Length: 462
Image 1 (tube, rainbow, N blue to C red):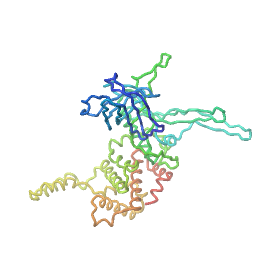
Image 2 (spheres, one colour; image 1 turned 180 degrees about the vertical axis):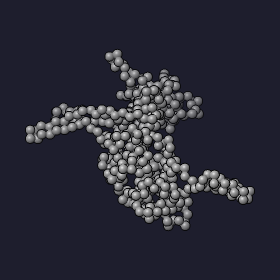
Image 3 (cartoon, rainbow, N blue to C red; image 1 turned 90 degrees about the vertical axis):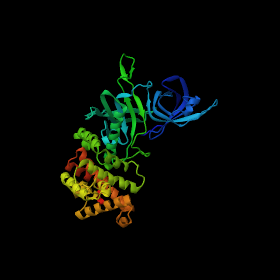
Image 4 (cartoon, helix red, strand yellow; image 1 turned 90 degrees about the horizontal axis):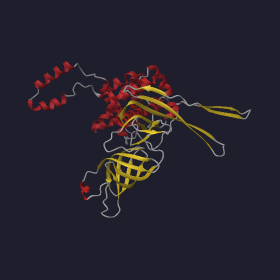
């Protein structure tokens, strides 16, 4: 997750079952979500603790400005015993919940999770700001109407809201006035749910935006509320406490993306008329082809550091995608079973185990055929028949070489710029299929291809 403002907080920390022993420390959350707690001393400074497990399920703290914090799933990375002196130890923290102190075995459940994502404002593209200038009469008017929140029902009994908020500011000399609008996603559940239920959906929606925006974007500004954690507003009314959430979420890149609407694959405006179906189709896709999605996004978020690795992840992703969406075999299952029986009967006993291993996947179609089936719906965008055959042959030969490094196919494998272009072409195939998966019609896909400069660029390389 993205941490836009430096987070370094000094405070006191203790174990929920030992609140009489508080030790000073510094809580640091780095950009990306990595969390470290440096403490003076140890939570247990007995000799016995030298051989104890270093894992601590929960630590409570009280830090400057933010008040109570709950640190989840912690372990020592550096454990120093002072034996009478002063020493510092460090702990890795998996998650921070800021604004609340949970008891030792208290469950962490919520009703809402709000979050933003890089480029979300640009992707949604809805603004309540309007301007009117009349330079002849030397007047200018800026007005703002807060857009209405937009709500969608998800198939997991949550609601997804696109929420709008704004801040205003003016300088002390009254020579400048500023209105800043902000867009957030908000997941809402009537019943209490574990935080993991919300962050799982937030992760999938972030990947959806990575796909739509065509770059790696990161989660930021997470906050949760629970009906069970309320604060008195002073007028006999209570309202849920906003609890900030920090953890090392993925995807993430150090550099904040700067992506104009014209360089995105598609925007919210493109799916506005059927956005509920699009969101649900995307979330449902994870139930069927999660491994293929993971392989694709590993090539977009920097997980693949080398071009060879990127190529292999893409080709494996396409193969996995076809396996998850098609049950095509070489021959009818009964026909194959009969053939296996005939072959097995003729096989010498000493080779029976070897033969069984060879035949276990014998009815699977090969990579070339899988790729041919995958590109079939979009073959008109992938060159002539001759160009498509050449493309598939090059992908298969390159995959075989990079997997087995057989010298006899080395000359047929792509490398350098040619390998990069192959990766670009496989990205196109993935993106076209993802558009189909979320519910785009053939006409709508054609419109995306026509209006998306990055996609058109990749297609033109074919």
